[in-house]
Length: 112
Image 1: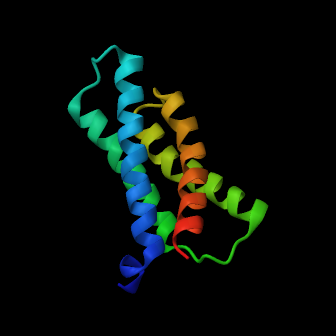
Image 2: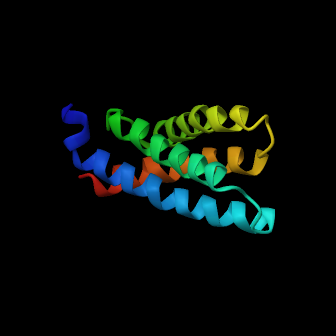
Image 3: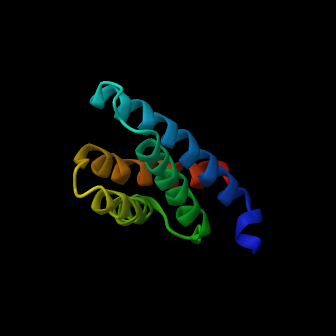
């Protein structure tokens, strides 16, 4: 369980939680405020989970590999949410790919 005690994990989890709030705001704006609480919580939790997955992975990647790894993790984790919504929220799915890169780069920069 030492993965959860690293600075990388803490930064990645915090980044995921913050980006989850950004995602909630975006979903509320897109839906005109009609998105349900369970949908919004699941969206936020998906971003937190993305941060956790990224936080557990080794810091050894550099440059393009780091960006591609963040995008791939973002795609995989976001696809779980996207498929659970009946493929109804494409914007959140695509944003998840970008958020994966942001979390990866943030974790890399601030975990040293």
